[in-house]
Image (cartoon, rainbow, N blue to C red; front, top):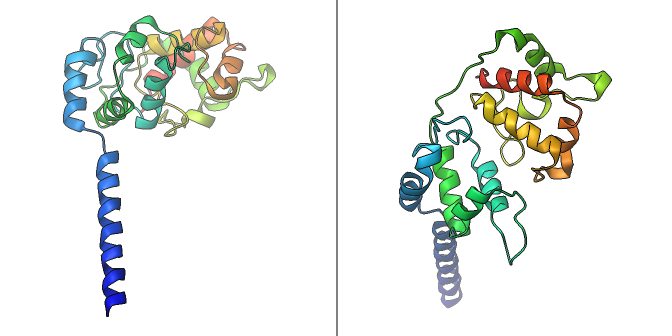
Length: 211
C-alpha cells in the first residue's frame, strides 16, 4: 500500500513537472504581439503585412524559418552575426531567445495579404524555372524545395508565395554576391550564381503570384 502511494506520488510529481516545463516552453504571445506592434510594425506591419517592398512580408511565414533568421541576425559572444544587416542587428540585440520565439509564432499565425505577378512578359520564363529549373545550366527547380505553390517547408525552406517580388529578387542577388551567407550548405549561393538578372527577376515575379 505504501509502495503504491509512493509510486502515485512520484507519478503526480513527474506529471506536474512536465506540465510546468511545457508551460515554460510556450512563448509569451501577449508580449510578442506588443513587440510586433511597437517595434516591428514600423517596417513589417503589426500583422506582418509590410507595405514596403524592401521589407519582407512576415505574415504566414513558417515560425521555424522566422526564428532561424532572427537568431542569425544576432551577434553572439561578440562574434559577427551569421546574417549581417545593420538595422535588424540592432533590432534583435535586446531580444531574448524566448522573445524571438514569440515573435516568430506571432507572425506565423497572421494571414498574409499576398502580392501578385506583375510582369506578364517574363511569366513563361519564371514558370519554367520554378517548375523545372534549367538542367543545362545546373539550376534546379525552385519547386523542388519551395513547393509547387511556393508554400515552402517548415524549418528548412521559406514560403515564397505572395512575397514581394522586389524582396525575393534582392535576396537572390545578395546570395549570388555572397553578401547573404546564412543558407545551409551554401545551397542558395550556389544556385543564384548560375542565374542571370532576367532569371532572378522572372522567378521572383512568378513566386509573388503563387497561392
